[in-house]
Image (cartoon, helix red, strand yellow):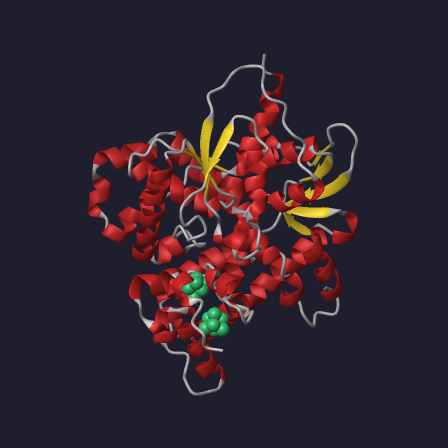
Length: 419
Ligand code: SF4
Ligand code: SF4
């Protein structure tokens, strides 16, 4: 089918109106390579990296084309061809994908060094000194995007096992993520608190692995398989009622380990069970029921909240109503719909680092819509989106709070005893 119904939903096609920048155009390119009519050239590889991987086209497609799978294979093909190889690119990929994210103790070490740099005021001093002006524009932009590393990582905030509040109804595992653990460990603590308050015994071992989504989305299929096996070994799905994630980008990948490990005799059957047990936090609470927070005795001003849908939650996992359900359950929140709520904000994994211009255009568009809601808080369920919108709001001087829905729910539970 070449119906083109996906075209109006594709942010890159919307920006350029070029067929090759559309899902249909990209699929035609992939098919030409699969049929041997085209070589995997640099132009092909560039096109695959210009695609956001936002999966809006999958939601729109009436024929059920699995673009997510095609996209991952196409990026792997692009990497195998070596069309984009250069010493600098290979070094960056080697350092990040093959070293840093394969063992999170390395990422933690880097995080602690960065934290010290920020805590001692060296980053602020460097920014004030004007020396950054000597750097090329691209490096200056990257420096401005450096996230603030949390003083405490998840293992400092959360016990390895947190008992349920009251009667235990479920035993769940909670994945703390990689970047999420460094930048948003508070969201992990909030998630554990909310799960416990909703009758879950929560297992959060301090040493965890990356889920491998970064690797799968960047053409490193074998590394993604290695990480998937490690996850299944660490969290045997038969031991838990659910394996919870609060990062949409991870969840979208974590639910497809069976495909990733297809043909692996030792893991394939367990991977199927794993896929069934992985739940996004909004999905899990909507399924099991959210305990209503009691209104705080202390009168608080109403908060106007709008909700930005992370692509990998709404398109990748078809989770759209559940986060709104969670927000509506919180006393004192008025939910205002965001125009184009499910249009990508430009974060898209590391897209804002690799394709800054397109990512910037998407962020500007998102902020324009956010302004029309006159909200106090933007809620969104993915660390990449949180960071992207936080950075955009800061740069434009918007007095906005950007928060995960689970944080707002955790705060409501904590406020129950306010007097
Ligand atoms: S994943 Fe997003 S950017 Fe890529 S083709 Fe589909 S809609 Fe377009
Ligand atoms: S991917 Fe789906 S929506 Fe897009 S052209 Fe093909 S059949 Fe139509």
